[in-house]
Image 1 (spheres, rainbow, N blue to C red):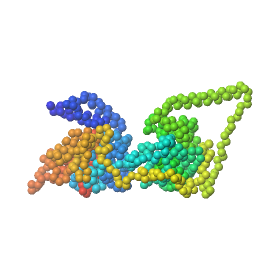
Image 2: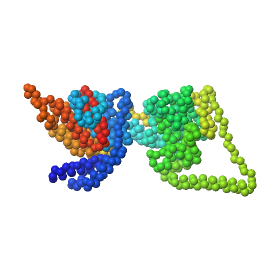
Image 3: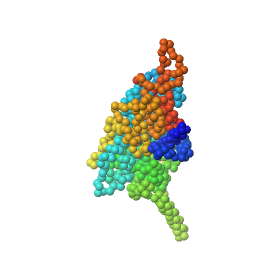
Image 4: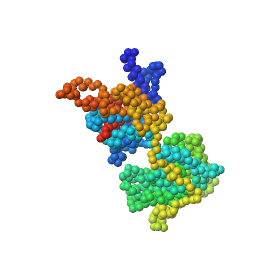
Length: 628
């Protein structure tokens, strides 16, 4: 076989490997040297590159999220595991990728163990590729045993631990002889996790200490919160409304956030700076009041309640999420707004620009929840086979029939000559400023005609409600906090556990053995020992041969001790020093470090996440960049 033919075959192998890597497919080895049409491969590769170009990922660092500490084993491991495995693992808080991590083709980690004077040395290729920008790392990264042990073991997220724990334990069941529709309508534990509802933890408190099983008589309470953005850059509570099934308001109050507000979000919340002047109610007051008024089997109703509960820093096991139980799209990723649901199913217009009141939203959600209880689980959900088109057709026909009936009644009245009957005008109750027994004002000013905050206002202020003992019952035996409590020690899994069902992702670890852990070699994980090659350059050549087949490539380079360096033509240009001394070996070592890193980076696929660590006992720095 001629040299040109061999080069063409090698190039086609690389093209096929890159194409398969971009498509997330396992590596391809042509049978008996029979390759696909090279023109077809080139065209597909061009299309794949163009698609990636249109959605080119961008990397951004927010080092202040580390609180002034240097990146260490945990931060590097989190970063590599996140880009390799995906959203199943924790996203590093100090690094952001847009539009999404799946746009990163592969991750390449190059760990360089070298003498201290070479860590911050100037390297021609590194300085150009990384634009002379590096991150100072914690000195603990020099410990390769701990470093690779952290990399090979993935921390199990709190949500995953809770999901597994709840799957093993028996649910809080009602009497099996009694069917309970309400228990079918509340979100399951798995749904609470998948939809990112908060669970009891050090920072999240449960609404009750003990809960009772749901029955058909379990009361529903509708909750709606308004938020602002504070100096913490987080959404914090500014208003909360809670109503009962009959529409009576339990409480409706403004809340003073603990931090200064930088955006009142008035367009969405209706809360203005003037409204919060003099407000003394705190988040803690609201938490105590909720715990006091909610029975142990209470069902919280609302639209996208996960955001409200996060703002409250509370958790609740029984949630009827209107946005989830009414589904008009057939997709779990899309939710119809409360405004549209109310208009479609209740023939009522809310949030129409005449003013905003969280009580109005709460009452709209409650009416939808009661309709759901009346009609059943399937009603209003395309996920369960409900026919949206048939409902719309029937609904429109009903409207036409009602209009025709009204017109017919009016015609008959005119033909008979009877006096037209004046329709009764419903007089709205006069808005009055009510006060609690303690003197605290109840409710808020509202300009929405017929709003429940005027029709059935609260009878007690939230500060007095917070002083009541928590509602309980003999059947309250379920400890929600204990049920979902995770172990204090971090739960770990080997990285291969996350590769199952990952579309053939393969990993390559080029490193010497460590005592603390074993690389889980198998079909999806390949290991290459540098010591098995004549020298480090041969080892790099072998790694580069099939680098594009792997979603993660870990390459360890050792320049400490007696290292066999590749031939360097620059050595011949150096004159021999006096007394027969040989030229300084440091320049040659520096060129070797630069050349071997350059070879690895140039071989990596486009849009790869490249991490280079230069580490010594005294200092460690990291270079991180997307290859574009």
